[in-house]
Amino acid sequence: MYPMPGKCPVCGDELYVERLVCAQCGTSIQGTFLPQRLSRLSSEQLDFVELFLRSEGKLNRVQEELRLSYPTVRNRLHDVMRAMGYEVGEQDADEVRTQSVLDKLAAGEMTVEEALRLLTR
Image (cartoon, rainbow, N blue to C red; front, side, top):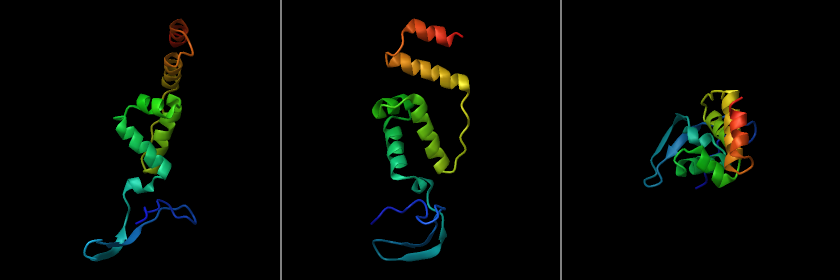
């Protein structure tokens, strides 16, 4: 069996299912069914969700695994949420700046003194 595509390959709109069939006995049900939210995701987004779950929802672990910045990982999570039909709250600019400083500190790109100076502005 092939995985169900999440979007129409022609226009990119959402797909729906008209027929379900039991693989064991062949029973079929016809109607109009909406697919699960996860089926809307691309294969790359599903890989991200799998890593996110293995990381117990900790973006810092995802960041380390993918070797990406925290803001990039957070943006990927937001992309997944939007693809699933959820609204994403905007993060405060101060939070983004703080996380960026902490990321650079953790990566050894700045000293503790430099980080403190930037964070206490």
